[in-house]
Length: 252
Image 1: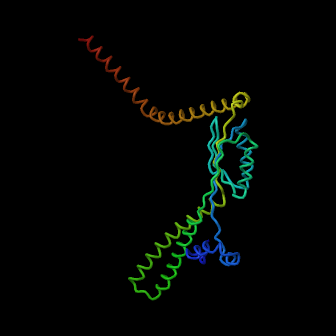
Image 2 (image 1 turned 120 degrees about the vertical axis):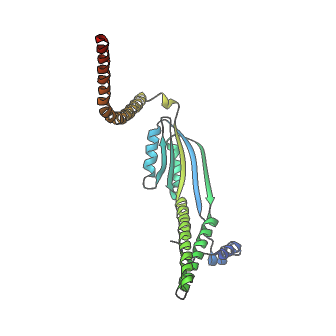
């Protein structure tokens, strides 16, 4: 919900100018809360990628969620949303799972965009209130125009509120992109695990083959039931005509 009494652009500027004039003035005006979006990205080289993904899932449970995940035989790709208050701790925990490489962190200040969106919402709400006041004494033609403008305002308010909700989510939950890959020695060690993966992949291929075979049979079988007797009849008729012609030649 947007506060209707939020700071306007003039108050924001005043706060910026007065921050160096003394503690008393700073306490009176205050500095706007900064709106920061935190993101991070890293690669993890580990002996057991599957176990690493499970450990990360356990850690994230209750503190965020997996926004996206993609797994293959060689690596896993994760986009994790984690409460910003746990971001530093979460990144530190990654070192427990293997070698962390290419770690990068970024903090983007969107305070101005956020405040601008709030100001636009407050301005539209004030305009809507004024239009509702004018509506009572408006003519029929003016009522139509007022209703059209109110509809436009409601549409804009929905879009702007959606922007604020998206900002709030990105601020409250940081985004961490992880690529988890197996170390070289991991490829040689667990023979049983590789055997199980091969069996699972082979079984999946058989299931897919049978699925498409069944689909093909469901298409071909009805046609065979309908066209089969017709084809047999044609063959019988051709044989009958052929025998008849041979008989007629012998008689002549």
